[in-house]
Length: 331
Image (cartoon, rainbow, N blue to C red; front, side):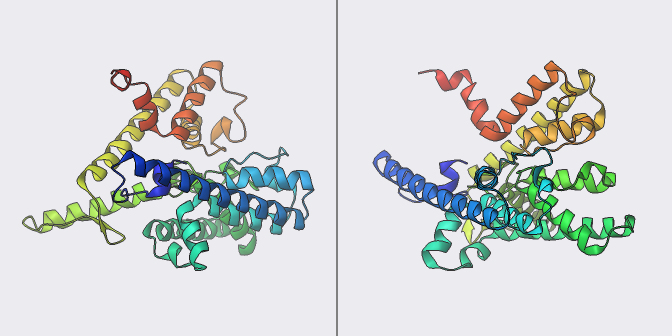
């Protein structure tokens, strides 16, 4: 999670051009974010404990739920507990960890949920979850008659939330689902959570901007002489911001393809290579093929490649590229 995202995920606030104004604002933002993060972690641990976890398990899982890290104290992940209450708590706090923390602060300050609904990124994030869950639930229900609709909805909703928030908790092995549904699960994981959150992935706001850019280009072709401004939440987005988003997306796609080629060249099969590159670049956790549950079958070279992919995904591609750019270190 980057502080620049927390201050404003799209457009910097006015007056931040002076260093003496930037530093106090960053410090204030960091303090507020830290307080919210701690409060959410404590609340998560308490609710896990009240729903049947031991104190140790509750604290351990709360630390990896708000951070959308996904590590569990049990090999079976949250499936170990066989508790709908625990799954529900995990879903709520995974979603909270995947939302912009500046919205949490605005909601708490005004004691209102309006900041969430008035944010177009959050609305799209929730719509993606709802549509994906409905589609996969209906598919599984009709393709697996042995499971009732409620059971399918429980498994799918948890998996979709876990993957789009890039947490990686599991109560079911989605790699065993029909291939199209397993791929859809990975796609929502690529989108990831919101800007200014603890989630990985491309981020919903970038996905939203790309969708709006595509719509604007169609309108521009239909009306070539029109002057169309680009707005998001009633704010005009500057051309350089749009250029940065398109550059990031291009770099992401190129990196993703290079990772797959490296894994294929090292002897990994196509399905496993795709799943491994996707899960590591987006910090998802579960993959497909032989890495559906763990990476024990990967060779040393493959593990090195995938370790680099995890770093690239967690620290953001542009950040890593800048650090390793010779021009950055020149004076």
